[in-house]
Image (cartoon, rainbow, N blue to C red; front, side):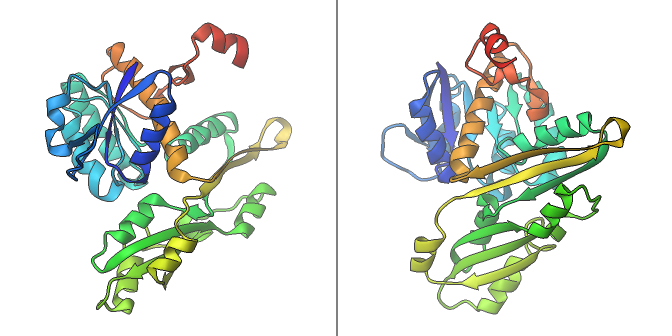
Length: 318
């Protein structure tokens, strides 16, 4: 059994906990949080190093904008880790830092998994390798982004918030029809924020602050709606999401070919947790093989993710 520790007990942490309970090759050692919860299997994050010999893989379930960049470089000194760090522009530098630390401490880290970055990263790589002459397009949504919602909630004066990413359908149709479009992600998507403001704060100033958050909203067409907590709870507390990767290009004899990978998710954190656990299995195996350092989904062969042995995979999946 692979002994798993969870760091953080928000939506993703709770989803990981639920899936581990259903797993037949993993067991939950404990959940580490800054809150002092007097319950079984809950531990203070400050005490985590006391349990370094009891855990095979830590899954980091904190936010990308506040937690992971601070926690992961410290935790990799004593633990193998898996995270879903999703700020694309910072991933390369984060990878370099984690790779050095992991190798120095003979640990193994899997960074930036989930579905984007994560599974979408794989599909983009496969599609671009097969259809060299073409263009790749990624669309996100419609759905609630955990990272973007957390970034809004971190603003002083915001009590709660949910943020939707919505693709522009006309862009999708043009791409699927083989049109060679050139555009940035911010051109093909809009952001929609539903927020609950704390009493006494200026709504116009809060809206301005939300729209100026770098890497999340500053370059996007963004609308902000201030609503009551009751309305947010009633209409915007689900966690749906999804998206698609489309590669359109020319194969032999200039024939048009299109590769499309699509996800429609009732629950973003539930699906992200499922991806995290598959890669936790892979990182456990990598570490046993003394493959130290930081890795991404581009480094992990599919056989490391599966509970099936290789002979079974060959017979059933090839």
